[in-house]
Length: 150
Image (cartoon, rainbow, N blue to C red; front, side, top):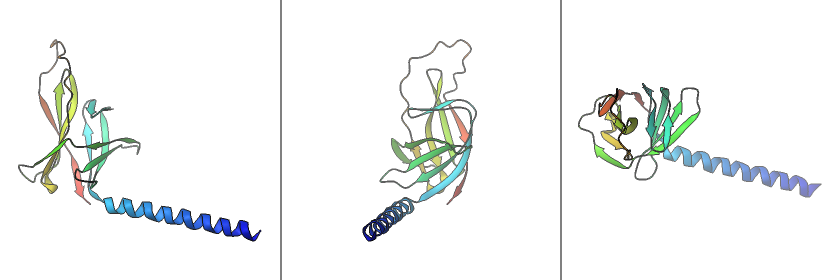
């Protein structure tokens, strides 16, 4: 009996240590920025297709490139996206998510974060050009992002 009680105590201590380590590593990563945006149309972000709708996001400090975690308003994870490159923002205005049309489909091409003075740029795959019948040839479309520094 005493051995079973000691094992239960040891197991509880190990679980607590793991939980503390995980929460410490999550806190160390830290959320740099959080906000919301509304996609007016379906858009590809990396390999993920996001339906039109409202989303929340956080920008996390992970390694040398920030990671953007996106969630649907209902709380379901839509994806985590790491930028292909980062450039300096021209101004420190409102955050803007830029959608670019390629082959008749919309893709997230960048997220400008004025508060951080950076533009996170994402790869857009080359897609075979779709016929132009009735399609808008607008190359990019900014989506204003409501964000707050965290």
